[in-house]
Image (cartoon, rainbow, N blue to C red; front, side):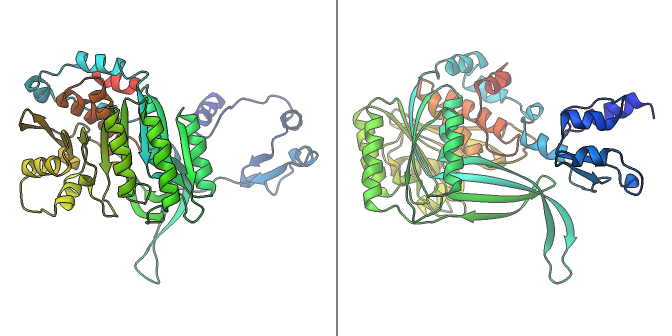
Length: 427
């Protein structure tokens, strides 16, 4: 094979930063660059290796390896974690025509996000994705055996809600409770990186919530959660309320991001909501009931609630009535102005007050090839809430939230959505 082709093949490897030819003695280049490791093929192990003396002269090491056979492509994993699969996203033309929503009007709304003052309060979560290579089935018991290939951690929960808002142009203050551990340190560093002004109260009796997802070949095999499911103690509750109420004095929008891990006891929610309402701050809330039990209707007097169908039915203890009735009952129970009921692969149901009655419409799922649905609701919550705050109607806000969710599910891992991504879809 011509050496130019070999060089090109090496450069195409995602792990390679630089590749070049060496015309002179290799040991001279080694002494100049001083790499920690020099790797040669296994066939060279029993031969003379002039590089060895050069490597060992400065404490380096010479290895002989022809590579390990790994059936899970690291390049595939990196692509899965990177940019979204935007080719699979399609705007709902019928809905847009029916509700007279244009791409231009949504673009104009996006431009107004910059400088909005947003307060986010809720449960911090760190999401770790562990990509694995499947080895087979255990002989001792019917258990799948895997070996970890790579790991990547993202901020999640209310933390990613705050990061989404900041990434879309808002000035964000974020309040939560964490443990005294390495996960909390990671969350602080990530929040700072995303320009989120964070105020994390420490409770050393609980861990910072960490959720591990073991994945293989684009599928999640197992989730492991490290957490405490109890309310924070009253002294911390008072401190949290005091801080958030002060922040609400100059805020445009308050977002409750509740995962039911104890950061938002009812007394905290009631005090903060009352203070925000008094200052005419828009209030929105999401309360997750995935592996835990929550009640989205406990967030009273809100402008927007965003439950899943299951979360809405759990809150109402109602498994029989139709979706439109369920959405209306949720709004009535919480005295909410509107609701976006998330229906998974079927999209969302939009439900908004219109005078003394409600109007309802539906947007289908916009991404036909989702990679990872975790975090879609967070994206929708933020984009829809910001839109409502700058004057959008429910149909504009719901569509902007749906587009944001479609972008998010097109990649693995919860990373902040940007205005550029939304503008790309609208163009």
